[in-house]
Length: 426
Image (cartoon, rainbow, N blue to C red):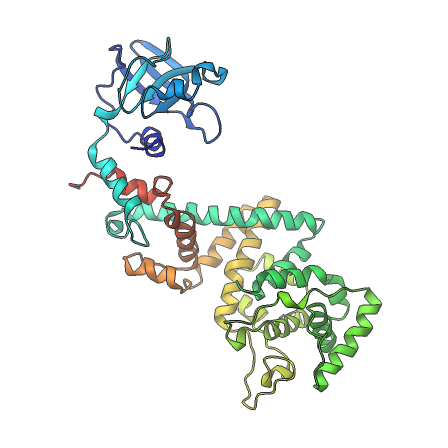
């Protein structure tokens, strides 16, 4: 038994509620266990219990041993003056019981299988702690947890996006531009791509949007790729154009060394992605207004199915010519990655900020309309019998693994709690 487990047992009533008595012999009924406190002070606030014939409302403190009351100096702390019940696991001594505070011993009332199943989850070496019991978890429990996990994932992501929105002075168009740029970098080059967008004002790009070569010159120049010496006609043309535009708009390039090429497939090189991003800027008109209300997946595919300019048909880097022609278009999986990680979340954030519930539903429906992501984590869940129906499921399961399974937070997980509280004979 540890304190975290004991607090969860109390919070979720994972004990036999009958025949509870204080150490003074008075009957106890738990009407409301209270709200768990994750900060300093008593463990549970606003609890409601009946002791004998008296109903008490106030705070509850939990300890493994009664002696922890004085060991933690609670008897000297005013925050613990409104304790209505001292709940302990073991009754190892009565000398430390605080005066006028009834004490309840829980060890006899907690089924042994609760502790056993918790121990098996947190001590297992399996990548998914619940792998061996997952098939026993009710489908309704899974689905309800999926919805909460997606909300949690977006809450975490959108907190950062709100900060970016503030940084952009509330300009949604700029926020979309920054987030699409970051998405073009995928995981490896997301931060450099975001920096590129922040170094390059969207209004400057808008003025030259109709000229693809100028758009490329601005983006490659701002990314620091036009600083080297390369005997390549197209490179020289971009560099000359950028030199002029840099002076005109007082632009400053970002450090080029931030871009990563190592262990990337050539099609994902940042040079190729910047060329594709330039093509998107070139063909985009009123992109935000189209995206914020989009409910049609084919329309979004049409908006984002761009390809790099002709020069890149034979190049992955400047000056390195390849004989075999390869058109560098943004593929279906890349477009769906954009929808999952940028378009749907920004729709949800915009709808939340504007109080438009219908648009929030649109964002969720976008994920439900897309096939699930394929990676080692989703494959792992599928191997253990979890049917992943769509991108909403795969996003939630990524959150489940990264936020809970990897750190053994089984007590905070609906699935873990379902396994812990289930009787072995059921």
